[in-house]
Length: 401
Ligand SMILES: *[C@@H]1O[C@H](CO)[C@@H](O)[C@H](O)[C@H]1NC(C)=O
Ligand SMILES: *[C@@H]1O[C@H](CO)[C@@H](O)[C@H](O)[C@H]1NC(C)=O
View 1 (cartoon, helix red, strand yellow):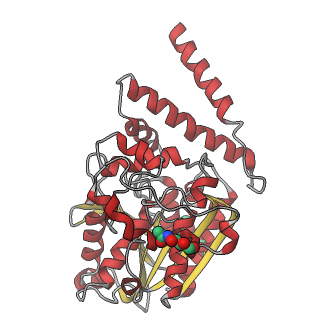
View 2 (cartoon, protein in one colour):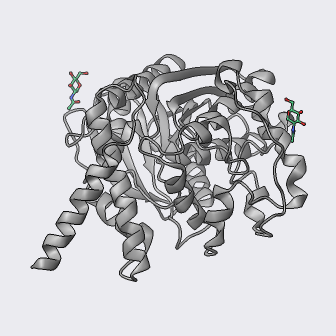
View 3 (cartoon, rainbow, N blue to C red):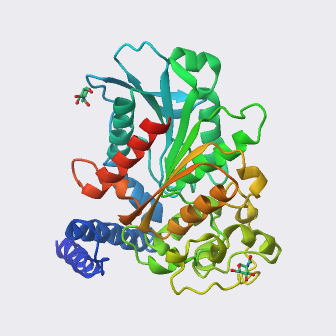
C-alpha cells in the first residue's frame, strides 16, 4: 500500500515538475500542449527507470502505452476499411464505396515513430487516412513495417519498399481501380524519411521510374549525421520531441551499443571518413537566413568516439546524403515543417536542395507548429494545430495529385 502511495506521489511530483517546462509564446492551446509534453517526458523518465531496474526495456513501456491507442479497421458510410497484408507486411486499406466513373487517385502513407514505435492503427493515423480517402475520393494504404530494436536498419526501409512495389503491380492497381499516373507516397517524421528514400530509390531505378507522381513529407526526419543544427539547438527540450527522446529511440534502429546515444547527443558520432558527406547537410548554406539567426556553423568533430556503424554514412538512413543528380528527377513535392521541431532543419534543407535542382516544391512552414502535432487529432486529445496540419496536407493532395 505505502509502495503504491509512493509511486503515485512520485508520478505527481514528476508531472508537476515537467509541466512547468517553458512553452514558446505563440503555441496555441498552451496548457493542453504542456500537459501532453509532460506526459511524454514522464513516460520517458519512467521508461528509463524501469529499464534501469530491469523490469522492461525503455521502448517497451512506450509501446505498451501506445497500443492503448490502436484502432480496429471499421468501415463507415463512405469508406470500406480492411486490414490485410502486402508481401506479408500489414497494411490498412481505405476504399471509397461510392461508384466512380474514373479511376481513383491513391496515397500510400508511412507512419512515424522513430523506427521503434507506432502503427497505422493509431487513432490519429486512422483518422488522417480515412479523411484523405474521403476528401479525395482516393484509395489510401496505411503501411506498417517491422520495428526496432528487434529489426534494425535497413529492415524498415525494405518493408516499405516491398509494400510500395506490391501496390504498384498492374493487377493490384486494376483490382482497386487506381489510376497509375496519380499515386503519392506520404509520411510523417521517420515515415517521411522512409517515403523520401523509397522515392529516391524508385526514381533512380528504370523499373519504377516515374511511377510515383508526388511525395508529401510531413515534418520529415532526413539525416542523422549532424545533430547540432539550429533546430536541434533551439528545440532540445521539446515540446513533445526532445533531442534526448529522439536519439534514445533512433539509436535502437542502429545498434545495441548504448554508447550510440551519448555519441549522437554530443554530435561526435561520425567517423573520420565521413567528412565528404557534410557538404550535403551544411545548414550554413542550405538554411534560409531567418532560420540561421545568430547560430554559428562549426565544422564536424569526427572520429572521436570510434563508434563505427556503416548505417551512419548511408543515405538509406539519411536521405539528404545524395548528390544533386539523384535529386533532379524527383516528383512533385510537398514539405511541411514546424518551427518547434528538432527536425525542422532537415526539412528546410531538403526544400532548398530540391529547389536548387529544379524540383517543384510546395513548402508550408508552421510558425507555431511542433513535431508530432498530427498525433493530436483523436477524440482523447484534440488540438486545433493537429487539425490544421491535416487540412493543409489534404488540400495540397487534392490540388496536386
Ligand atoms: C461521407 O461523405 C459525406 C459527403 O462527402 C460527408 O458529408 C460525410 O460526413 C461522410 N461521412 C463520414 C463518416 O465521414
Ligand atoms: C559549410 O559552409 C561554410 C560556408 O557557409 C563553409 O565555410 C564550410 O567549409 C562548409 N563546411 C562543410 C563541411 O561543407
